[in-house]
Length: 241
Image 1 (cartoon, one colour):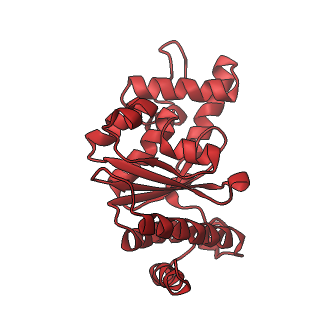
Image 2 (tube, rainbow, N blue to C red):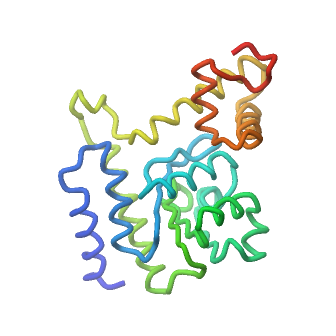
């Protein structure tokens, strides 16, 4: 990609984020992605302890696909974060991709998502999250599009790092730059803690129990966590949450 093209990417990102408050920036970055790449949806997540933390999404479908990965603990996003490498699922209905992530592939295609391109945010040894691109049609990004996607991921990483280091914020921002989508996932960690205390299990087992229960009930982990924290449900009828 030429220096001029890189400047063009930077200009689109700058225009989209101009005037945005700290918590609005992640969403604006996803909006910029749709203007820069031939994709139908985009989402960003931060690498977390045992699971990614959803940060922003271009729309409801992209947000739901991202939540599916969190709930399943499997998918292109997980692989990209774990390896620090780009992961391409060119056709989720093909045997190759469907066999890699069978449940994710089935649920994503049911929503009309046919291909996913997941890029790490940051270097291989210091991956801070992923940028996930969704398309309604099968096929890989063209060479020039893939190069643009890498440049976009690099610039988004820089924007997030600067955002996390900026401050101090206004009192209305509560000292935080994290989006509402990210802070909502605090309930998942609270629910994990409650299950750990109730059952006397380690954090990874508690998270696995939450995922299994959510899958059995056709819910996302976040939806189940909200109920557990609100004392409306437990993982077992005998658990007095």
